[in-house]
Length: 396
Figure 1 (tube, rainbow, N blue to C red):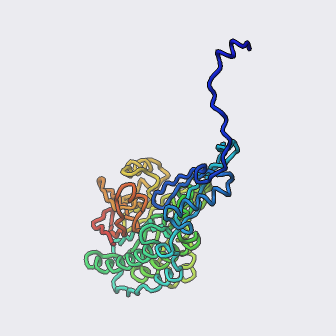
Figure 2: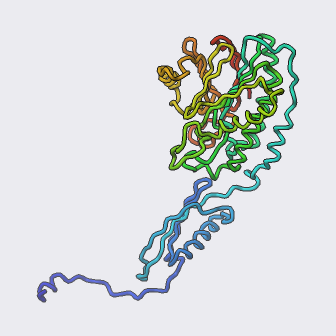
Figure 3: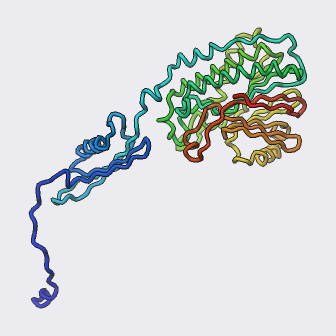
């Protein structure tokens, strides 16, 4: 390059400044963002270990106790510090630990003892008749942290079942009821497969404990209603939370592979050991690779589905589609019982009736944050005969 060209391209470059001694308070940037029970902390330092300590210091600087927070995720990258050396920038995602005072893991023995503490209702002398008393419930989601937790859901379920048994005596003053039918409509456990496992942190009970509660609540219903009728039927269908196996959000096995139905099968196995006491009890779950089951209730064909097969408000469209298939028993159904959407909804279309039960859990905290709606838990009892459902009542 010629001297003339160098002269014309020359620029006033500033003098070199010697690197100063590293000052963490000036060179390490810190940023924190707290949203409820989550916090994002970004720090820069010479090493990841420095950043980990600095992130804890940032929490303390904001008046937060680091022992109440746990790291749930991080993202780390390199950056060039002022002295020209390579530093590390790390973003930590913290979640507030569950405090013992508010969400302490419930004592399972106490939960199970609550089931045994239920009063015994003595049978009536007249128990035959041409009507069926239906008890429909679902969406306990045992193990879930939301609302009043597993203990509250369990107590509510037992109390509602007991109230339903008391209502049976009252409705026998109006109807000749000889058949009691208990419909278990799915999502009785919270499980760990929903939302790709995102519900794990908010689930207090292990999977086996959730299943045990479900099984023993079903057993309680068996012991409660078996002495009260000439014929007792119990049916269960799979819910989305009760799916046994999922990978990457998708079910890997058959549609009937469900903890919701297997719990009732276990109760049936127990009742088979006492034919003299439970010989009048029948149990029903969907056939292999199926999601629905129908039961004849005093001339009324009652279909059961969890409700995750159809979109909200599209139950009759789904029902009509199912009824089009000759191999489906849905074309004979007079009543469709479903859960899943956690609120009471009853609608008739000609002679057919759709009954959606509320959840037994007190609330979905996510739904309350998103929509503002709180829960109205309970179960539904109904009286039916020959395709008609003259009585439908919420028990809460």
